[in-house]
Each structure stands twice: as structure tokens, then as C-alpha cells.
Image 1 (cartoon, rainbow, N blue to C red):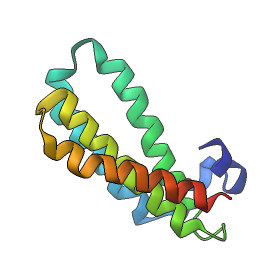
Image 2 (image 1 turned 90 degrees about the vertical axis):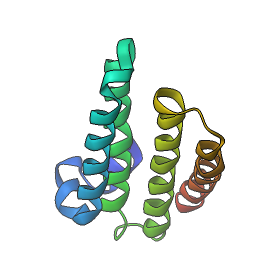
Image 3 (image 1 turned 30 degrees about the vertical axis):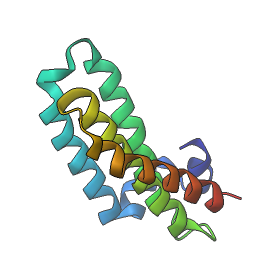
Length: 119
């Protein structure tokens, strides 16, 4: 997030990201709403974390045209976001192998793409 802020000022992220900003914000809001009754003492930490992850995705989409590998960064951030959805589902809703089945590959591929994009 801090690195992307050096490329595109955060005040311009929403405009620069366009639809790339709408979807993660909407998904995050729906997920927090769904998780809310199960969060208990984790409510504040989860909200802070969700804000950070959404900022990462929106920032990555905002920087996609400003960086040589910006699209790779945006896809990596999106996959990382998706992997966190699997973690949240597993932790707060349903413990199931399917969460790991898509969550772990999304996490590792997302991390790899982010690393490649910022090289």
C-alpha cells in the first residue's frame, strides 16, 4: 500500500481504479456484514484488516496503468484478497477443506504475482 502510494497518491485511487475499486469495496462490505455476528472480540481487528486489504486492492488497480507490470500487481492483489476470503470463511463460518483448496493456491499465486510485479 505504501509503495503504491508513491506511484499514485491515495487521494486519486478511487478515480484511477474505476470499477477496480467498486468490486472489492462491495465484496468487503458484504463479507463484513455476513461475518459480523460471528466476529465477537475480533470485530475491530477484522475491520482494520479489511480496510487494509481493500486499500491494497484498490491501490493496485489504481497503479495498473502507471507501472510496467501494473496488471500483474492488480491480479496478484485480487488473488490475495480472494485467499483472505477463504481464511475468513474457514475461521468464522465453515471449517472446510474447500477453503484451503482455493485459498492456498490463490494466496501463493497472488504473492508470486505481487513480487514479480514490483521487481
